[in-house]
Image (cartoon, rainbow over all chains, first blue to last red; front, side):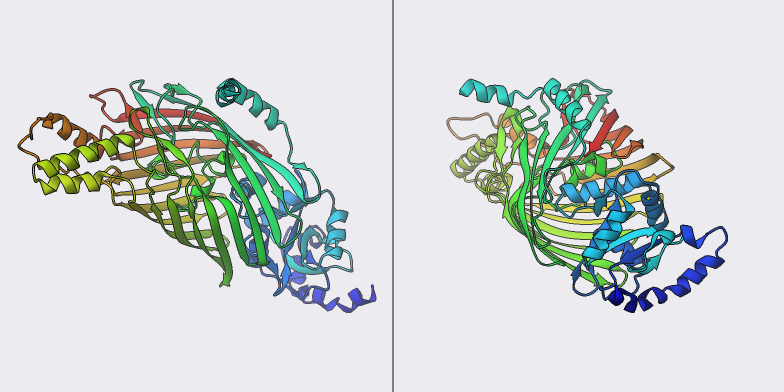
Length: 152
Length: 424
């Protein structure tokens, strides 16, 4: 735990973005979705296109060395729906359609589908290459925020 | 034993429907941490407004037994097992049932490979792999993955080969904000197709290889490909073999080199097909746009060179995505003649030979344009209903992508389609 605290500056590095969110009308920071990684990951910050490339299975690495393990909330979940709407302005059915093509033509598998927010947190704690998304209000201190989603 | 085999091959639509109903209710199944079971399927009905013509989705489909109201064009079912014990190694097995050359729905193994990743950005695959020579040609059976009732026939309909046994290599690079993927593949075809007069042509043993480059960023995909297929000894329509032999002996008997060279230009064995393709997709927000062009260069007059293209524009509004699809294909019209004038003794009917030569060259021609409008309705998270209307104008009769039973065919047809697609 001490080690994680030591890494907290990673979260600070996106404070600028957080502040920006505060000033956006109609957008409460607590409800913003954020992308999080394991604090041991060398990745401090990701761009929107990097998050898209990882979640769409195009970029297979997180940072220089780690195999990216993107995580999704399974089924029809409002947080998941909001994530893809804010990231790509796409409906979940189109995301499923995209993955159907890739999976059944052997190009890759969709992000691992997990049942709950706590499963996402735990899986990120256990995997250095894992990457997930949560509402800001649910982010625990021991995980690092690397990107804040805003509506397109 | 023989009877059992016979029964198995008599895979009728009703059984197929039952299987579809059974699988449609299934969720993706996690058999263990590393083994998962998935599937995809389409239940598609088409209506062709001209019952003297048989529409084809693809030249791998036989024209026989397809009515003007048909279930055979677009219905298919695929099941897939994925095995992923770790980050560096995975394997997949996929079988697909669709209406094939022998007029049955007998399932075929469409994919069966092992994949090794020495690095996350490098994939090596070996086994049975889908043929990736046109923009989206390795996912033509996965109805749920595209907007339309079927991939544009003017573009993908001329590709009969769908898979090969061999290997491929994929390497990814980060370039600007996107990912560049380079791919090479090499293998042998293993499929049979319908040919003239109910015969079958076997492409088994034909070598296929190619190089592809694809760049993808947030909204854009651009993909370029050059591939070649070398038909083996088997890749010959028996009717063409016979015609070529006749021409060759007549040409030799009458000292007509034109007939001898025509014989070898008609033959398919040991000939090369070269495929060039460029595909572009733009998928920003609600837009789903695709554009692709291709050129095929062949060494046989039986399948003349052709150019094809399509443009598809879709716009998503909540659960509905209306779309417009424009496509065309135009082949060369060789029109070569035998040069035979004096019939040798004993005299064969030169008029008949001329007719067969003309038929051999026109059977592979295709020159048509299609305007399709339709809508996809995503009524569930992994199911979609599609309705589509195709207005097709064919400039030639006969045409590679039609079976026509009417010498006065005007070439104008309308195809109505309703398709239910799902994945699990």
